[in-house]
Length: 116
Image (cartoon, rainbow, N blue to C red; front, side, top):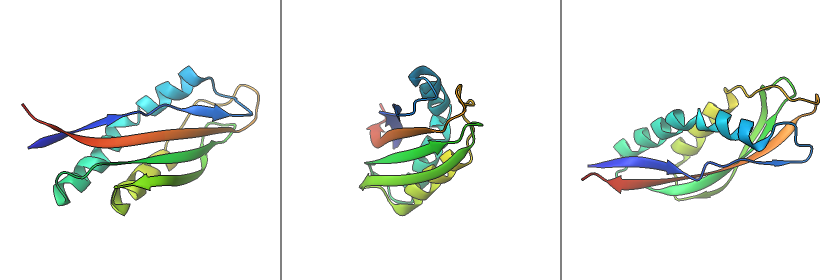
């Protein structure tokens, strides 16, 4: 049996940067269990899948999520991409400090790890 490992979830904010990288990383880290659930559900249907994707996320000044655009999908079934996109769309980030939106790029990779 395999278990999933999620790695490389690191935000990079593009100007105007209204959320500092640490705050954005903490908010994204809180989403990891939901990301892993999306992947585990797909693993149940297709054992051994792995892959990566990137999400470009617009965070509105109030911290709600505007547009979420997946890109660079490699090896992941549409069910994982759709699920992760829904998770991020429904999430809430801290409000901006200067009243402007923030654009985050979130790279995500999923790979199975053999159980001991």
